[in-house]
Image (cartoon, rainbow, N blue to C red; front, side, top):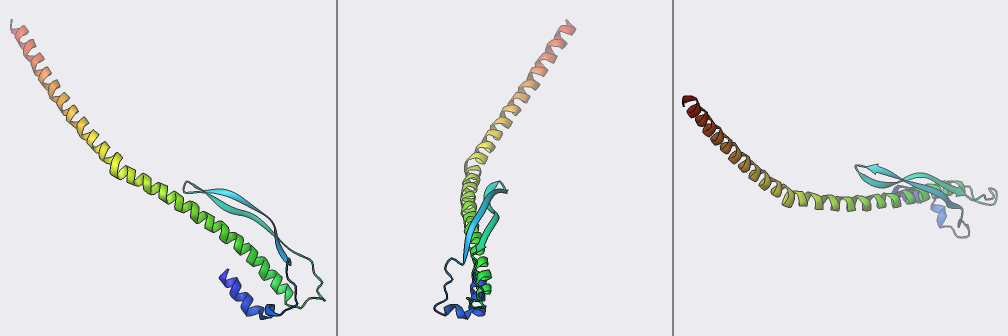
Length: 149
């Protein structure tokens, strides 16, 4: 948009001239916004845009009106794209906030809790293994006594 504004200033300084009515020369007729999935976030995306230039009398208007119409067309399209891009940034900011909350939840709560549970499970399995060894030795001694008797 800044580039288009600069172009208008460079190419069409005569726009400052009074008496040339350009109101309604170019207007946004229709546009369609679709949704696109970007890394798991649903984002708006400009599908199509229809900008119309109102018919005007070429002999009655100055020669630079054609260039002004093209630049106005480009400016309308650029403004719509900027608006949609701002919406995308808003959606991404919200997604980043949600992801940050989830990361903090995992880092501060769930991962430490899982590590503590893993430690308890290892201790339990170690105790069970020692008990199994002890039972095995007791059983072996019983069999040896029975075999001797």
